[in-house]
Image (tube, rainbow, N blue to C red):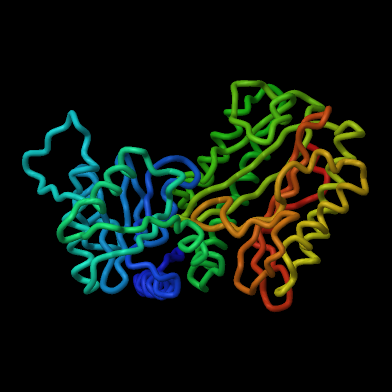
Length: 399
């Protein structure tokens, strides 16, 4: 079976869209930072260049006209030339480690490569957008500021503008190719969740179960996880975030599973609570309420509906059941090159849903006296409503 992949033509279309958006915003240049930090680090490089950074940071430099450049450190160069869809790769002196020497690598300065990109576009930049600022190290930010402050080919008086939402906004509506890739990611997540269920037994550890789940997901083509696989039990279910521990699973205790595999740079996310034996009454009640809340949000999901109303449909069910204080974060968010990415819909985001969005309905109940849980699944928004991307059973799971 040939697995889905994003075609080369789609990356050219992304560059064209970004340049059109830059023109509307009056930007002469966009520099998008990426690294290998967990969760959101690779996102900009993966979306714009299909490149997964490792060990060294990279930047995608997009001029207002012409092809983008990929700026990297010396150990990334050949890896990027082999795998990235942006083929013009430059090793930037400011991205090197001060204690390392690379006598056979051609290094360029940020100033020179920016000047070259500006020449391609036919004008020195005056307004430069920076994406990924929340991840960018001070060293690289200062190097960028210094490069733009120098007189000469680059020019002075450059205004640096935060452009995160401009770049992430390109990702809100998924193309048919992206939809196919994400559908397959949900197949992987479903297989991982089933493998976890099959591995759960009294005396097994959280890490035993996570290992079985990740083996199943890797076997189907997962390249890694958007967030660490969560297998949490007993008191470990209480916080929103958890990491697997060598704790043994026990009968009648709550167990929380969350699978978020990454495939071809894109993610899926499935979350389920369960119990070995019979759920205590308060846990069963919380499970039933969360399932009903997720269903209410799914039924409210229609093109043109404000996102706050969709999320509010779930929140109202939880509040009516007396559990509202445990609904601790926004329950509807996009899924893409980040497992939890914009647009994110909570009570304050009234933007309308649009056909082609892929959204996760994630009903969280945490910090409760009995622990915490989430029911999470993905949906493609079509012209008629929400199409589930997995068919893993909901309801009260008891083994």
